[in-house]
Image (tube, rainbow, N blue to C red; front, side, top):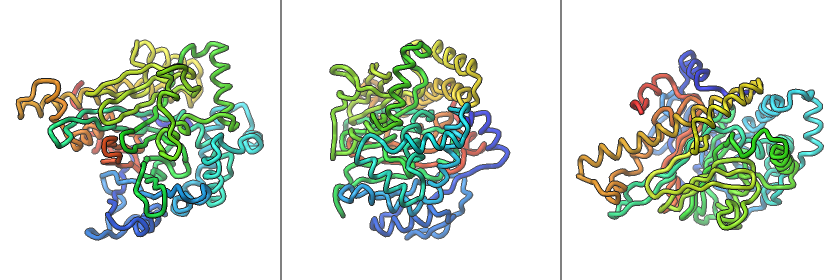
Length: 454
């Protein structure tokens, strides 16, 4: 199943008038909140809150993702039982999704033979704790373990994303950076299983980390804890791509990840985020030596003072940092135009429906990056006029979180394939704002959020 392209989803949006359903999280106690969220995830169009009555499921606005608490003191097999109870039917939908995605990638294999081979060889992931969590999810939902392994290992290969850091006022006369993020994906069935997970070290303990992810996924795509935030983007480009030995080493690594012999990049990011087993960022990225072997990707890290984006290859990495504004999408910044054109031509030459659709994600990455850059600096310029700010330090203090929320929702930063968008504050260690789109954004929404020329 190829990812939906922007032109396709625009037509779908106009034809069907898609919209999302809003719901606001309350400040009720965690247990009561999870019960309410289970009802929402089961497909109910409405739920009661302390201050509002039933809301329509066809609202024009996106909604906040259901929120669950993951107690790390529980046995790994029991940590995701509430999530599984709420999303059992949706997680079972991974079976036909896997048939489409993996079938497209290995179209030369009969589907039955592919299932038989996967069931035999894809028995688990490398990390023992994550493996036990997946076994618990498999038992609770009835989804075969090999399907969960495919989902957790291959998902990051299909995402078009925007990630970055933006300087804002810290409210105390200084400045800080917040971490913004959108996740775009051409798999519509995943929209309904976007969730926020809050990790606690023990029962009734404090939240030590949070992430935005999909039900059934135990790695980290987007997460934050005190003084640290991270997001992961798909990278179609890599060094010496389409050269025999380079491709051999790359796909050998990917095979080892699928077979549970090595960790996926999202699993490595989890080890950076969760305080139970934090490893140094430099160990993964290779800033102080050789980089950890991973699939090609873009990484974005922030500590609230500086934000770093990394073009990560299998065994190397290129770093860029800023304490002002920085953004990465799905393109290398060096010789961007040439690499976009080259990637698009390669995809076209392969004539595969799946990789051809990825070409449009690559091409649109530059638009999304320029859009975010333009909107941030344009907002800052307009705001600076009102307070006579001119020097670098004062300019970093003119915007606030609400401004970044508006920037993130501007089209095409948020677009027809966006599943969720969020703004994280690594200084505080929390998620300041997050919305998911259960349906693609409508044509009216696009008009209302369109960026000015950039």
